[in-house]
Length: 122
Image (cartoon, rainbow, N blue to C red; front, side, top):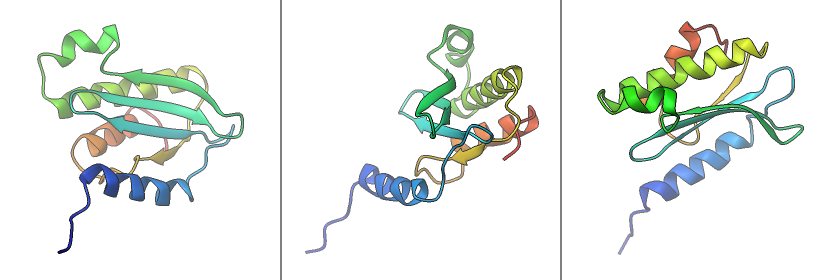
């Protein structure tokens, strides 16, 4: 009998495949996205130094109050806008997008589109 792999297992396999190619530098850091059942997390990471430069999520107080009243896709738009705003304040204009093994639709696409429209290039 053929056993179907779990969704998290297939996502992990995709994520490892993506991470072989995507690497963040000081000039062009990596925008990493993680999505849980209820929240969206985004980080801008310098892989050379191994440090997180900027982070934003729906758990933060700025977004949390608004995120309770709106859809998950709309709350990910707020995270995308916030991470782009913080990146531009730090002087980061270009990033490499790491979708974390998730398919590029829904919350991932909404976050990426909003970050692009706020001024990040990737």
